[in-house]
Length: 494
Image (cartoon, rainbow, N blue to C red; front, side):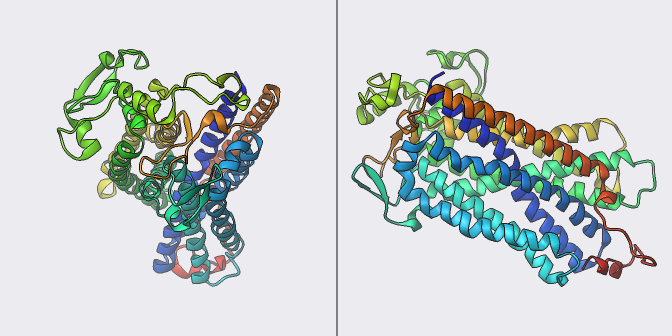
């Protein structure tokens, strides 16, 4: 593989790995703050136990997310310095806001929450929980604003061959960002919901035949996770539809590749599944179970509009952005070669379906959990906790598939052109990579992959340890003479 392919693999591996931590942190932080609010308001011990147990798992995941996230920005200078020079004037503001404002608040108040259990007044301590949970959402907002600018550049002037920031407000209110942010946050809640359902279902089943004093804690957690998962999927469906309509306007090639729509159709049908290789030129011949006119509705809110196919779009892109790469030595083997404007169709087609399918599966398990625990019931069969544990993976896979589709679908651009924006504000991925030797990128790729594998072992070990420990493993020891059942008995925690 050449430097470009290696650099893309490295960024893909580290980014997807890091994003395994991010959604759980975002969703769980808000849910833990909600659990603590319920305890402060009611004094009910189960909410306190929920706060301590899920809060412990949140802390482990947050720490691992910080460690794995640091590498992301390093890679801009390591493997993508040409890209960094191109976007630096724009990216500086949102990334600075994320680091100096959002992450600073998040880490500061998380520290106060960790060490303030026996030092801060109840409501002050609760305010710290909400501060770090909302700051985690703000942090995601600034990162997504930067990413959305790559998908749809706005708020800039083109000066001396580089985009120059004209309006930070336009960048932060980019319609692509405003659609992506609620969709991503809903995805984060779906991940945390499936995690809670899986762990709680296992604990509930494990002690189903004993008089477990924490049964109410696990049942409440299970139902909370199930409701959050169902609502999150509904939000994902609504916001996903909004994103899709924007993509048809801003990146028509991405959405055509999501459907493997090789030829223009009017009206265009939606492909449920394909049997065969959608990457071939006759990709439409392998699609089955099409829904007539549905793709036209998803694109334009009607059932008769024309949707452009890959072959026609290639001609449009060639006319606007050229048929060949510039004859620049910095492009290496691609210098002067024809530009392939077609994304990897199997990845985009199946990634789009994996995103939807696994997201729906996670919500389906949530619905099943609500049914099995209705009217005080406790599931007593082996298959449900096993299904719930397996279900933890479904939104993770859906989230990862969605991001892979989003990033690979805009190729060969690393900064995709804005159809109604400033001319020249776009960049080919081949132009963005650093001038490095293949061996240098191999070294960092192997090193980071091994490091991330080691961190993964640590993450799994710690999460498994505290999950198996249950509520008992995270509660502080009772003081002599305390009554566990009383609402005031937990004053020792403050």
